[in-house]
Image 1 (cartoon, rainbow, N blue to C red):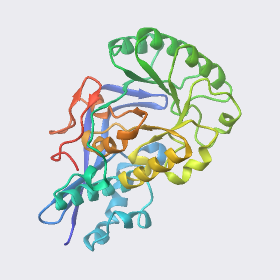
Image 2 (cartoon, rainbow, N blue to C red):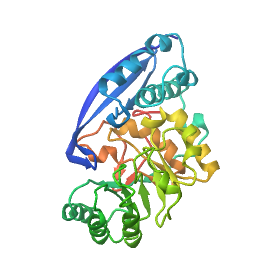
Image 3 (cartoon, helix red, strand yellow):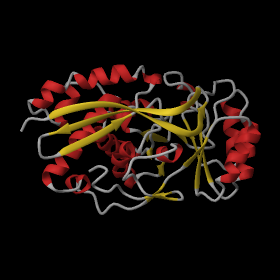
Length: 327
């Protein structure tokens, strides 16, 4: 059955400003791949990320290269040989999963063989800023079970202490987004341990994190920018305690599931994270996150508006996707 493809760029305003150590943004720019066979429709969303050399134009161009092979019947198993891992492959892979489920009249979770999906507790994010501003943000979220705090400055001790004091009952994850250095990582980790932080994400730049295998980890460390796909995992042993699986890095749900399985075999803890996107981007990740130690799928909560229907959030609890959304 011939498959027709549509590629669309969408811009979703952020509620306020979202800031990490390397910059701020006021909108989420996403690419949606829609596949139609005349009877059924499958969709997948991705978020191009400049950190990985991606742009809206480059991702759209990568997806466009697949038009003829998809029309000729290429499937998910063919994708790794046709396109590299990253945002473009994620959109197509997830669209193919959605189309497969619609054709079969089954949910993706059932096709994979997962047990009944459950609602999950997601972290909510405090943007990077000065200590006083971040403390105020943390105070507003202090009833939430898990807060993810964007750090990555030269001197983060005040930020760490202020946020921990503002939300004493929350489990706190720090995400440095590669912003720490060999000179300050030890004192930052000690400050985090003193504040009761439960996880530190990507403290050093990818490729410049060798010191992590030689210094103590008073707080467990999670690889994000250093962890893209299954083949990266062996290089992370001894440096990181957990990995952050994001579908925009792995190139879709297919590789994310493979990576999850291998990570567990190697003894890594698992976080399932996201870029800032809509519920359509989060929906496939909900399936991977069923087995995660930490869930960070609050992208739609950062947006001013979301898709309808979207994922249902009740405080920090996010329910599995409806079939009208995805899967």
